[in-house]
Every structure is written in C-alpha cells, then in structure tokens.
Length: 341
Ligand code: KG4
Ligand code: ZN
Image (cartoon, rainbow, N blue to C red; front, side, top):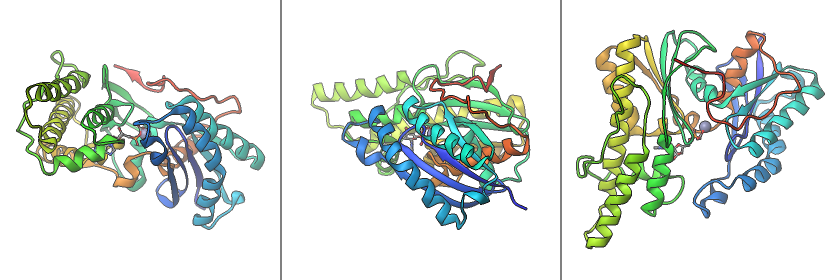
C-alpha cells in the first residue's frame, strides 16, 4: 500500500498542489505562477499575491487530484507550507489544507518551506545517503545546512543581508532586464565574459560560513552609475556574467570549505537559484574533484512547487509528526526548526 500525500504550497507567488506517492512518485505537480501579474510592479505585491492564491487554490487542488487520477478518499494526509513566506499568502494554503484535512478526517502535516526546497532532492533521489551538506539558495534565503538524518539540520551559515536570489533580482532590475531577475541574468551572462569586471567577493571573517551579497550588489550599482556619468558604454552580458561569477565563486568556495570540515558523502543544492546552470556546473566540478556527489533537483523542482512539500510530508507522516488545528502561518525567516551552530 502506498502512502499518498497531497501537497499545497502558497508561500510566495506560486499557487501549487501536487500528489506524491511514497515520497518519490510524482503523480501530479500543478503550478500556477503569478509572475505575469507581479512583473509590472517589478516584484511580488503581497496583497495581490494572497488574493490570487484565494482565487486559484481550489481549482489547482482539483486539477492536481484529477491529473493524478485520484479523489480525496485516496489521500493519506495533506501537507502544507506554513512558513516562512508572505503571511497572507501562507494563510490561504494553510486554511485550505486545514479545512480539507478536517473534512476528510485525515492528518495534516505542516511543512517548512526551506525543508521543502531541500526535499526536492529526495523527491528524485530517495536513495541519497547521509550525511549531506545542503545549500539552499532562493529569493529569500541563502542557508548552508549539514544534515545527518531526515528532519535534522545544523545551520552552518546564512546570509547576513541579501539572499543570493534577491541580489540577482535587484541587479537585474537596475539593468532594466525585468523580473524575476535570476533567469534573465543567466541568459545575458551566456554572451558575456565573466572576467570582464572584477566585482568584489565577500568572504567575511576567517572560518565563517555566513554570506553577504549587499556589497556586491552596491558594487554593480556603482559600476553602472559611473559608466552612465562618464558616458562609458556598458555591456549588459559582461556585467551579468561578472556578477554571476562573483556570486557563484563565493557560494562554491564556502560549500567546499564546509565539505572539508564536515566530510559529508554528498552535497545537495536547492532553491530557485539552484536552477542557475553556471552555479550547478561550477559546484559540480569542484564537488567531483573533492570526491563528493552533487545532487541537484530537476529545473522545475528548484523553484516553488508543491511536490517538494508533499515529499517532506511523506517523511513526517512516517514519523507521525502531525499538526493540530492550531497550526499557524509563520512569516519570519529562519524558523526555529534549524539550530545555529
Ligand atoms: O525558491 P524560489 O522559487 O522562491 C523563494 O522561495 O524565494 O526562488 C526564487 C528566486 C528568485 O530570486 C529568482 O530570481 C531566482 O530564484 N532564480 C534564479 C534562477 N531561476 C530562479 N537565479 C539565478 N539563476 C536562475 N536560473
Ligand atoms: Zn521557495
């Protein structure tokens, strides 16, 4: 008998529902992106996002069940993201999940969004062995974790200011590329020279696994401003490639330094920025050279989706970690789930 979980994700600007069997068989993964709505504002507008989730959530859940060829009676549990994210957006998914679980009298499982990003890896590689090092790079987070078993995390380092994805989005905006910036910068960088401009890399003090990207972002802004003042021509591909290289250099160096200290069997990459091919490639090369297996989710599972939520739901279901009706949305970053070293 398989364990069938319905996952629901509404933490930011994607309304998603998925049906996953046994934590690794994705029966459906329906994602309704609001990107077109928010693009004209240059970023996610929280009130607009929650309203959109409200309009979509029931339709998306129905579609996920239909594509999976099942109905509510076939579900063993409902897993839902409760944070971190936008409070109003989280509440829509959470309240829907609570109502459905209550109506069907099946368990509700609360899922941390960061843990869901990490589990995009277990979705396709349930065989992965521990310990693993995991770099979560998204629009809201840049966190490096060490994990020795399911559901257990040690936070080794995190960004002290901007998240990696946030830096991509902000730099893209000042270059007039649009939103979301990550994929647009990646595309421009393909025609650029990563060595054209020597942007700063913030390694911070000796031995820390924390990150900082705001200095790099300011350096790019200053470079563009100086060019504008002096009438110097700017190559968007060169700026993009040099910026992307500065971000990936620091990420890769820090992950490899942590690998040298913690000796994991493998390294997992997760979150929206894990879709970046320059990062995947650079980390892949260094990981292989160090004898570590690098695991990266398929592109569609890097950015927000409910299959990864259902995957966490499966492991928590097996452990009997269920949520009560009092489960609340938690908007704050760095939920108490992870313990800082
Ligand atoms: O994980 P995600 O979908 O949402 C959050 O939980 O934040 O990540 C979105 C972030 C955005 O900042 C976006 O620009 C970035 O991931 N991103 C990328 C790429 N695709 C998405 N950054 C760099 N290269 C990409 N190909
Ligand atoms: Zn995310």
